[in-house]
Image 1: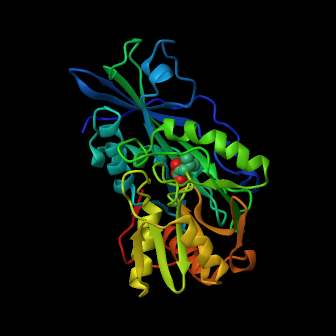
Image 2: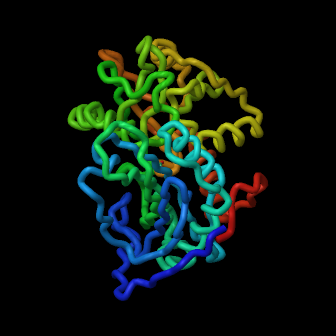
Length: 354
Ligand code: COI
């Protein structure tokens, strides 16, 4: 593992009050950078003052979107220490994203160590108030100055940090979701299963339309049949129907969420029948109409566990659990955040001390 250099920031920013944090609005004093050069590999890991990145206007990322990212969090536990949640899983997924976008892979264990060092430098930025955390955004961009459509010969990896509260203004209150029937997010063989900026760019139009109609986000349908539910874009979706847990299977167009997997592990251990399979919007709305759709929620690093209170699909409208958070959704939220904030033991070994 190459040694990290640290250049401290001369001026430190004022830290925002915990109640104004929101999501991704404030950034810490330092960032992590590392370069890739073809023939040399990844090199020069460094922590430097947070600031703009200068790139040639012809850099590949600007034109052909060769870019991947991750989202993870560091938590200030009740005893005051700082912990990460399943960081190796995030870096494994980053490498999966790299493979799909022709970006050279990284050593996952090294990245965890670099990240820990960055967080130690920024330890004062990890907020302590309940419901807050330090959001970690690793990303890689293609930096070669070239307009030919090919994989870049050079890359920049950066990790930036942002103290956050809840992702949705609703907090733990249920969100309203619009089932998108025009645009599609992904198809099998595309990039739906990886975290690349292009997926999110393509989702904006539907998201804006939904917001203009009073919905928080859209629920995507599969791109081929336009029948089966996939994910929300900032979170995976899970449903409790007639006592069973149903979530879309990971068939290549859905992001393999780490919070999703953690939910499924917990639910199986609690004795629930979990079905990872194709779930038609028709089946979902029919279950709602028959009173069998008991709970619905989204899972994600940023969104944590977000109850879904209402869904609209064309003319059909479903209100779930009278628009209130369900007992199981609440239990999942309490257990996951309990483990993350150290209020509960971590029998799965998911947390890593910084
Ligand atoms: C996350 O949950 O970390 C995400 O990356 C989702 C979204 C904020 C892009």
